[in-house]
Image 1 (cartoon, helix red, strand yellow):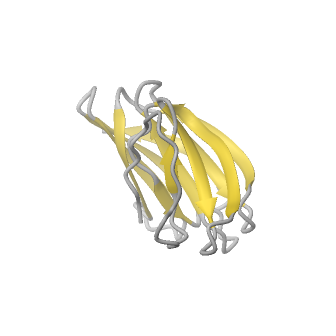
Image 2: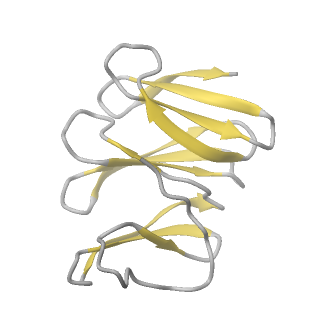
Length: 143
């Protein structure tokens, strides 16, 4: 599951009370989580410059959703491990190819742990990281 991110100077809220992610900022990704009552659940600045996508998955088998957010201007991806209460347990930053604009999480190697891949439009490449099931990604493959 993913939502495209459009970074802008505007600030907004989820007026339909859907509780979905809302992201705004000035070239940075600022994530705002809203409860259906429109009260703010959590807010934090998540990643580097020009995030284009977000993948949401349980990367460490704890039952809580985690975020994978590429920042295309910085050639990096930030992995945020969620605590299940609207906060983050830990942030981990991983280098990727030039211009990551897409990210997807799946079990690419069949070991039962989620991995993730970015599409790097600046270098016409893919960067694949293999997960250890604990929310860390130690093995990288560039395609």
